[in-house]
Amino acid sequence: MSARYGLLGEKLGHSLLPQIHRELGGYEYALMEVRREDLPAFFAARDFQAVNVAMPYMEAVLPWMDSLSETAAKTGCVNTVVKDSEGALHGYNTEYYGFTRMVRRSRVVVSGRKCLVLGRSDVSDTVRTVIEDLGAS
Image (cartoon, rainbow, N blue to C red):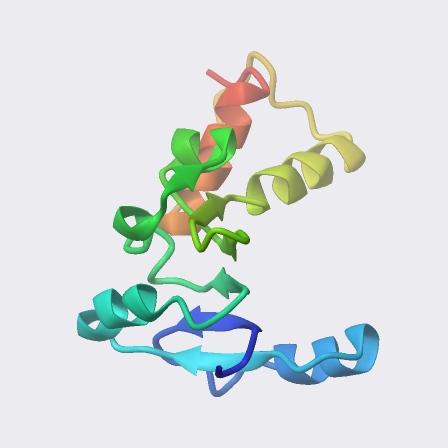
């Protein structure tokens, strides 16, 4: 078995996550650079326990999920994949909760207001969903 935990993405050489997880969590966390055309083989092997998913794969991983959390289904983006004891893959969008908390903690009021999200990406889908759920028009 390769690394049990890691970051799945296309180009990850800049990431400091392996060092952060090793220092703070005390476990190995691998950078799993996978080309888009190799995603089917990566998910068929299921040779991990859990992976975080980096752009641009947050939407691309959806076909291999056996289930989606409510926020992952709502946003159409998965940034965390967990394999259960049966081998099923469950997709989550934890960025939804992080961004919601950031907005609330900063006391930014979006309810009833017009908001502009610049850019079009997996992350902007999550941001748009959060601000709509918080009442932005």
